[in-house]
Amino acid sequence: MNIEKFQESMYDLIVETSTKLPKDVRRAIKAAKEQENAGTRAAMSLATITNNIKMADDQVSPICQDTGLPTFKIKTPVGVNQLEIKEAIKKAIIQATKEGKLRPNAVDSLTGANSGDNLGAGVPVVKFDQWEKDYIDVKLILKGGGCENKNIQYSLPCELEGLGRAGRDLDGIRKCIMHSVYQAQGQGCSAGFIGVGIGGDRSSGYDLAKEQLFRSVDDVNPNEDLRKLEEYVLENANKLGIGTMGFGGEATLLGCKIGVMHRIPASFYVSVAYNCWAYRRMGVSIDPETGAIVEWAYQDGEFIDFAQDEAEKEVAAASEQEVITLQAPITEEQIRALKVGDVVQINGMMYTGRDAIHKYLSDHDAPVDLNGQVIYHCGPVMLKDEAGVWHVKAAGPTTSIREEPYQGDIMKKFGIRAVIGKGGMGPKTLAALAEHGGVYLNAIGGAAQYYADCIKGVEGVDLMQFGIPEAMWHLRVEGFKAVVTMDSHGNSLHADVDKSSLEKLAQFKEPVFK
Image 1 (spheres, rainbow, N blue to C red):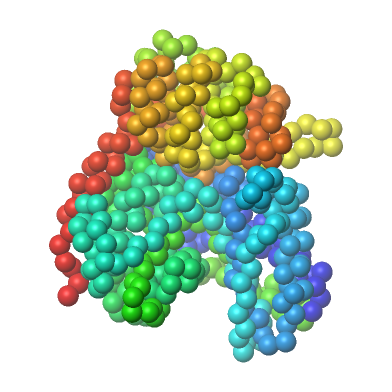
Image 2 (cartoon, rainbow, N blue to C red):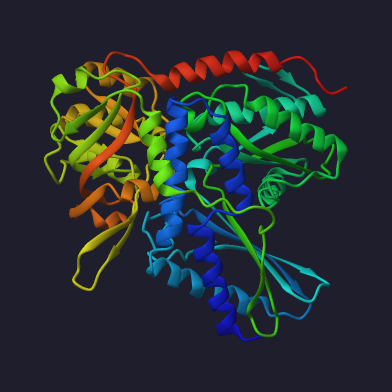
């Protein structure tokens, strides 16, 4: 095989997967958008999402700043050198990272050091199978950390909140899958997709669940029982009212795919792989002699080319409320005037801070004056030009709940007035917001191009020893929009949606499948 051409093909696959959603996913998002009620937070979120998809298309830039853990599933004819293939993939990964198509995401689990090139022990994930066909089949999924953290595995029988006992039968499996959607809430960037693996052991069950995510959204399960279960879950999960970003609404789940395998008598696992709306998976067929791409996968059906100007109009139309402008630094009086549901836009400075920064700030002084300032839970994709100037290539929010142990204390310690992220935070942070005079703002998860466009300059960076995603970037922004979902008066939209969706989940307690 021409291994240089194969490496080029893998680079093209990586770029396409990171920057352009497949046809089937676009159609699912369009359908969700059409069924959402106009003028709601969910409608505004879906309009922002479709705007972001178009921007990523036009700029050939990452749809979401979290380009995830690259996972390749490869089928090769007998005799193909798999070692050469894996080495070519690594070189393509390095190139894509260098050019800003992937964020450097490979972190040493013991030292915390970022390799900077997306390579490391076990990274990327490359899994091979042999087959008797005469071409190489390569499929790639980029699954970000926010949705990966909402994966869940159940061991039957078990007791489930809102649903009671789940037994070792089809109804028990049904209850587990419905619960998996409930527990994700908006933290996995709903509306999302799920792959389910029934049986196996703990590791093979999760492998089977993730394998389902390579299926087309439009396919039909050949197993009649599983087909009925997929249809049931897709219909009824959307009755939970969790909605896009967990804001409430009609669209909570966009796809459900289920696979089954044998198990040993003592173990009965139901494994669920949750994927965000930014469902980035692509595939190619490769000529084993030339290394060239022969055919792209997921090309059936209509291609939805979301019109950016129309999406922008819908964002404006969906926000019927007045947009409140905040200029950083922000006063406590301004924060106290905000309430859940308000739409704000921020001008001025904001500072990124993720897991490493929050741990650092809990033990050290801040490198900058954060009094009255805004912390953005974001790990951007950054590139430095020849003049040494940093540019933001993608900058959507990360899941905030990971910072719950630190957030309230850090806000009070440094005088921070606003935190931006996605998925909401817990009771400790909510109490601190009320005590201190702070607010939590929910940005639209995955909308990395939409928010990068709001960033007008990079004024500096601190704590680069933690790597690009975890450093503290000083960003000058204009018109950065987000929704107040936790205010300084003890109100939390996230807690309200969790409570209401749990109540709705209970209606699915009774048996359905005999």
